[in-house]
Image (cartoon, rainbow, N blue to C red):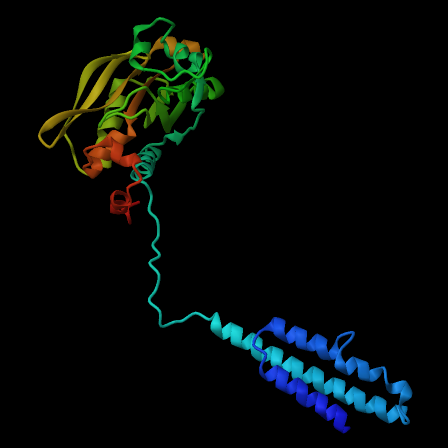
Length: 324
């Protein structure tokens, strides 16, 4: 290679030796091979050469060598960057932990699975309801004193946040008629807040309508549910009570740690409710029951303050890891 071309190669090598980044390399490439680069300008002098063929061969050799040097230098820079960004396997690992299901979700799933085993299917419904589905169809007409017990959140004069999931039962009966065997878990809303009450809480209500259903069927299913949920036989008792949508009505108590605790309400579905949804009361009868998810979770997990469920305290929620 001609001395002047060898000199250009040497200058290029020296510049590449001090090059540390890809941007610096691109600038050097432009200085030598760009539109106005040193090597590019040499090609413009071919027309003045005595032996144009020989000069062209020498310049092509120069260009090829320069391109090779630049390519090799780029590879070294990129490899260096990969090494700099590589994971240091000697560093201690980051504390990454899996989440866990919320105790409310655990309780809903547990109770739902138990009743599915009894042949109940799960139904869902709207959280915003009309007074008809939330009250009137359930034998709670306007000005009925039971409405005062619900402390309802009204959205406007026609719509409200449902105070119980019994409205789901009305929708289901009007849609499918009888026979019907469902449970309806979900959120409900009432104006109440203290260590045992929350403005938003969860209920699960059950409904079984068929021919020749009586209170003995209700008693048998609920006693079996209590035993299956707590995974042991627990003493129970049924006390007479009042609900507008059932007659007769009862509250179920359990003997828990030596004391009687009320855990759910139940009863035989009132004839007026069946008539409101178009079910023949001479052919069909049935029972309904409703329980508070939070109450059953508190009993199962020994939680004293209902508000703990909604404070997003990780130390509290981590206690339920591994449960299903």
